[in-house]
Image (tube, helix red, strand yellow):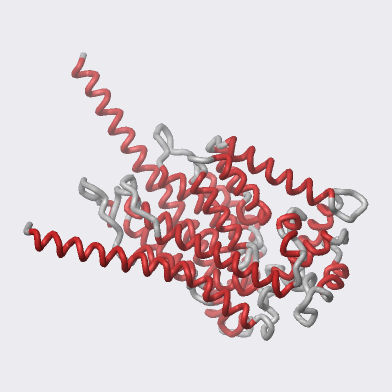
Length: 465
């Protein structure tokens, strides 16, 4: 190759690298622009920040030695918070179902009037979303993520090719431009922060298990979102990680309980459970049959009721069957070294099962989508092309604002009610079942590779003898 040719290639590579950096920075900055938009609209749309109002007021109640699980107390404290005309926290829309351990973490914000606290909280959420996006756009393909491709054909040997220049940025856009993240910013739920903590936990689980455990302990504030990961960590014998998480949660719960205003330091626990159960009872807004609200729900019972009310009667049986399939699929491949692509996909599958098993809203889906697209960028070549395509399809359809069609009203044609407004739970089901199929594919590949290696080893011993 001539000197001129090498110089041209070098310049082209530098320009492509600069373009990738600019695109990556743009993707990571999108959440900040979205947050500024929601902050500007907060005084006109009282749905904006509604979830943060509840956690903020609960922390403020705790600081004032009042009971954050008493609905009248929440509304009284909110009325003096700085935006008394906005929808008050508590029943019926936002009952306090979070553990009291959230209060110590929000102490600094709870000292401030709500407008200032909300602005800071939006910035924190935007920064968290930007970091999650950065984790995606900086993903690199793994050399171990090479194996089955279209129709199960094996890729030729050689170095793993780099990703298409725009693919990581496009994958990042699935997250930052998707409806789940946008909705999470609107209501300012804990889902974005929890997703960041889960992503960091999975990143540092091997190199820094103590730090990973501390982060996981913080993530357990929203325990319905990530607690099942503790089961996988136990299966993988990550005892340092689990110990650090246990210590973190114990300290938070201890501090919170000491400051509880009730007769017993732990009297808040039955009150929290009673509030949570009440919020999902028949007629309540979080009940699976509340059609005017369940467009925003992800759990399987809500989807089954929209498909046919009679199907929802079998919800427990169906969930039990799915849980058995999931546990069976997540077992360790027999007689083989467990590779990263299997371990990390198993986390995604368990998180997807968690989404459909218990009450969640669409903003919670980012805890599945973020690690899923990162996994696809790294390991998609380790599974058949068709399975990888279906997982990409699930990630993409989760972006769309199906729950916002017709304002989420149940007074729509059946196809909208059962398939369009419910695009996110359908996406979670695709991730779950296609992910299970991909786990089996990765497992079979590992077992076959182990068997071939063992046969080669035995043959070498025979020749040596």
